[in-house]
Image 1 (cartoon, protein in one colour):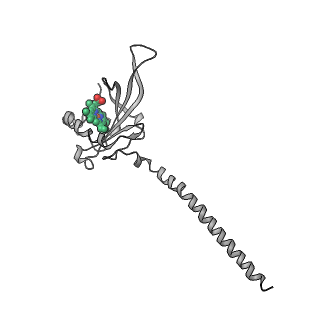
Image 2 (tube, rainbow, N blue to C red):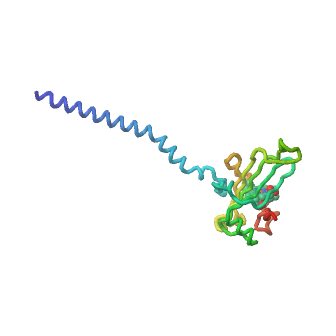
Image 3 (cartoon, rainbow, N blue to C red):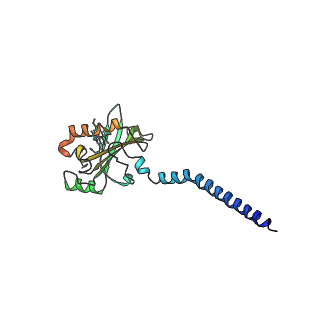
Length: 184
Ligand code: HEC
């Protein structure tokens, strides 16, 4: 009889250890899964442009049109510059410089001949989405504007982002570095 008690105890220790090990394994198996959830919740950070940390605004496809534009060969693109409400208000009031919080997005597509009407030109495949965000403190070194250029939702490299301000500064300084005027 006395020998049965310790045996029973040994068995239950073994069970506890086995369960503990199983629990540990289960937890460790979950780690990559939990990590992927944590990372998936911050895609905005991963998709930010180099240098400026600018992202594609979520609902820009619903924004109001400021003006269309067309780019000659070799790019052959149709463009549409749209803006958030702060941008539209500033344009309508003729306010310069644009206030902090202004966001301008330039959408672009390959210029394509309409299959239904020979002389009509329509948007083909989307090429780039370009973004300018006004934050006069954060982007003081670049006229108050942060820049982002995206292809298929992914930001292009740092070298390309170094070209943005130079061109906008050289040609559009007198209009707060913005080329596009409100279409009449
Ligand atoms: C060589 C000159 C040049 C460079 C470099 C350039 N842009 Fe522009 N950008 C323009 C012109 C010209 C327009 C006017 C619209 C058009 O013709 O497409 C424009 C328009 C824009 C607009 C709409 C607001 C506005 O100013 O009219 C955004 C947003 C924009 N560019 C973002 C960028 C970003 C981001 C980069 C860098 C990745 C960049 N641009 C680099 C010339 C340039």
